[in-house]
View 1 (cartoon, helix red, strand yellow):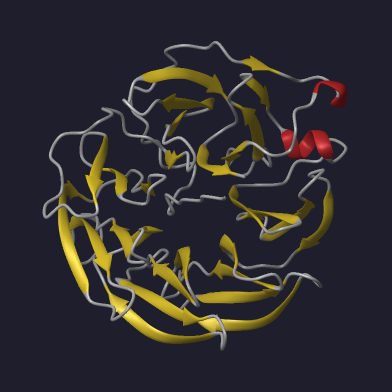
View 2: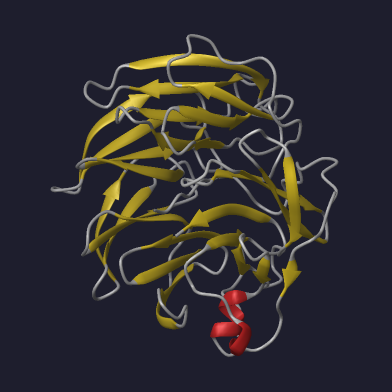
Length: 360
């Protein structure tokens, strides 16, 4: 099972993990040869890298043994890095897809070896990739810097070519699949949007545009197949801003919405959302840290379970451990993981600007 999340106007300019210094460091890092390597299946961390420095990377972490392999893509591909600003990692049955935003490409690797098998170049502004069936995937693309609408590119997973382009809202970012539909958050890119586009996978056409809060960034699906969207809100520097951040529930059967005020006003920082293993508990970044909320709650919580503001947030779909990613200017980041009681268990140093944890 793979989980991916976005903080999605994440760039190396968003230095929001304030005060998150390493508390412990007990895990061991491997920089050696393949004879010591762990299996490809495990926990992957996406490290954006420093803007313009071509040092984005993937970290592979085996929690049971505590073994860490930083620069995993580089080690498996003759010293070549994936590129500049690694935005996303997703898996199909046989392939891995590494989206590299500022390099305007998507690296395709063999899932079993992590060796590159192909690359899709000349993408304008790729953000997130989502395999939707055995033969087809969707890639959000477009910054909307010129107020134009963004697109979801339809990718043939066998030939690794673009077969279609679906026009959605401005600055499409995160996606989630629900049955035969894909919900796409339109964050506005460098502009403003407040919609979620719904695509019919069988026709590759938008069937609905659901109005939510300003600047929707992250999205998850719950056990009822309803969709939850974290909306950042407009900043004080944007027209009509600032506006408050909101958590919006979309009922997937009829697209009705319910809105929860999470008591945070938009500012620089990441707006993250994850869901627990039973798909009943939501985890999001609010004003003072990470909050937990049941999908049946009538109001958003007021007290955080973790008093840190992470650059990335994900929850292990098997055991419910919470993973926070921390970063500081010009320094490599850290993965901090918490048990089901939200007790900090360990921290490991990883790459620059880590933004997501992917479980495979």
